[in-house]
Image 1: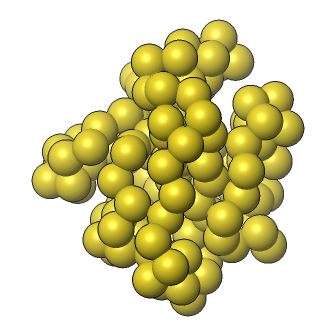
Image 2: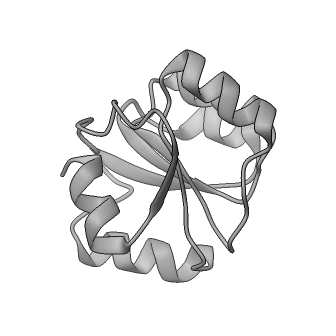
Image 3: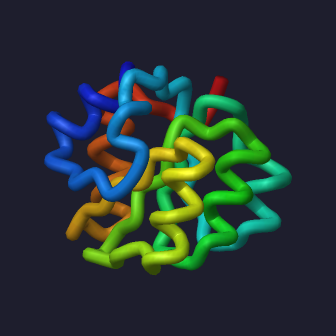
Length: 114
């Protein structure tokens, strides 16, 4: 499923890389620990986190993730948005908590397994 479809179905708000929303989402990964995401996420995953600092963009870029969703109404720092624009990494936000968002993603067919 493409990011654009998930944005529409989950009512996500896009904060960066609005021209990179045709990316295919191959799975999902939820974690707030950067080292965990580096070690265990897969290329094309949609990353669910509450972290808002610019290091999330570096991790997403290194792992070639499809995008990042910030939960609980969290907003990325301005430096994070700027870095995400430079790296062409889509950052989206939602008011939903992680548990609810992951459940909805799963019901849409986005899983954490290959």
